Image 1: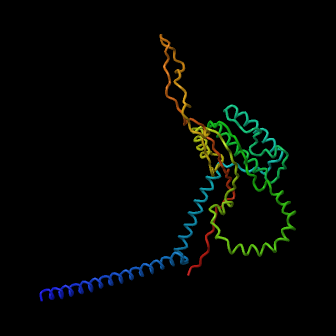
Image 2: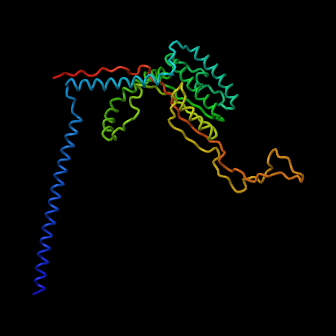
Length: 336
């Protein structure tokens, strides 16, 4: 009987505990859903407020005008800064001027390089060697060719002053105005064949568009509205100290904005030291032998760490457009 009474009490307690636990779980779950619903509702209201237009009253109009004025002032200051030391394009620069400039600057650069022990590629002409070989100069490109030549000269001067041992290779990408006439004639030549294939390519391009992945966003899209870039690539040999000095010099150049887009560096020596590469003890240079003819020895030798490095630099000489926006007119609003 005692055992039966204990079981009854135990069952009653367990049932009550289960009911209380169930109630608590239900109550907490209900509260969770209420809180979540309130949060989603507040989130939706906030999103709607952010997306909604500013109410067109005089107070909001004044705030908007102040914001626009602040933006215009900031843009104006930035424009003044980036254009502060930028040389203007010379619209009266002629082909004769250009060829004379190339000749004079090439000679001056060769003399400077010899003085600073900087080895240049044979026949170095700022990546414009094609013009020394008879390439036609487009009149529309002349002022920018002058500007780019001087930007490249600035880079080479920084390299020489930094202690770079050699410029082993140098190339320059031609910009659009240099090739525009040639491209135009090619387009005219190929126009007929392009038209004949256009019909068939349309249907295939439609099919292709359906299977294409979404286009990636280009972070540089629209950059052409505010700047022009002139790419050149240079391979150099330099010590660690000289390379560091070169990179710092590029970064702080006051006259040309040289944008280092990419750099590849490798050790001049591609193999590690082997056993037996270390020389034996050597006499300390400049020390007079003692009475017994003994001279202090150098028995510690640096095996690696003093090698020079080869670096390939991809640089954009950036020219900011002088017609940068400095004024803005706030949108008209109607007061109600």
